Image (cartoon, rainbow, N blue to C red; front, side, top):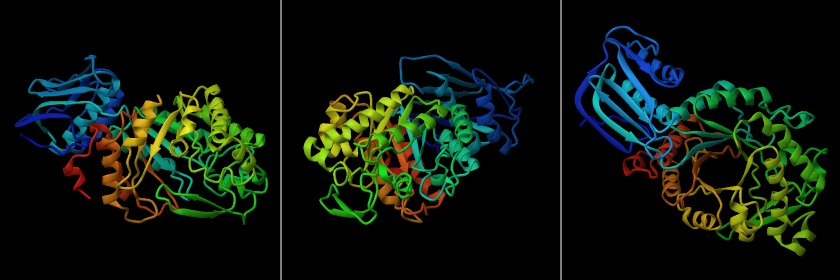
Length: 450
């Protein structure tokens, strides 16, 4: 049996040494011929093969594709390579795209002599995504974003979020983003269209509570902060019991109507530029809440109530804009009463970035509470130049195997302290995440490639 190197690795692969010769080139019959051209033309051209989806030349090999639902997973496909031609049977248009990606990889590896056989494949996670930090000193160019989307398509991933704090060109807020090379509304719409054509959902991601330092150090926005004084210290405990000391503004004050109006205004401007039905409003690591302006409210009502009331109001704004809210799950997991107070339609993003992180307990809790949730490991590349490959592999493997029936796996590429990591380091981690999200595990052979 021939063993091609396909990524992600298919669920069922039955190929043998006999081959199909493509001397006369290839043509295509089926839905979305433009997608077929984009995915197959480059691979064919690199191997001196002619590909024309509209060709009728005698002897040209026909790639036949059709949608034939088989009571199975969306994205499911069967790819059959025979002497008489190549047949794709898919559950939906996404399945056809996945099959064409696989065929492109085969052509890249085998050129004009494709091994005969059958590939049957389907994704384990409905959502397989990347969250890319664009707020920590490095805002990608549009060319780099387009290249990243192309990579996601070839890895059979279908979701992208650009993490934003202050790097969208909001009107009337130029003082915050003027020196940050911001992404504009026109660029978001262009990227959204580009993603949609490749089966990728581009979702809005704007933090609306914590991680707002880039706003709050400006005099205009300082009154919105939980802690206004730049010299005021505050602290919190990590899950390991260690106390962390910080200083100055970090979160918006959740009890300040002006802060709520401000955050709602950002979302009202940003969200309409995205066709995705989802919007990530952040709300993570808001450890300073209750240590500043909301101290009395937290003392009276408890952290969970104060936090949840804020999340509810912002989530309602998201829903009024036609989106389903997402939040990071850390504060809800630290204060479980939050789960009884927030909108049950909210998607919880359960993150953890260390090799020994336990995704099982929070995932099962979120499932028991009736929330849709995604597991969110990391690339382990940030705060480094060469990354932490061993940590990344174990972290992603844990997320895939301890997912508690999560609807998605979102790998996070953060840029803490300056986004020093080089793209090839991050790409290795992204490939591991793509394999884990597609198959539901990370094969030992993949784990060993660190």
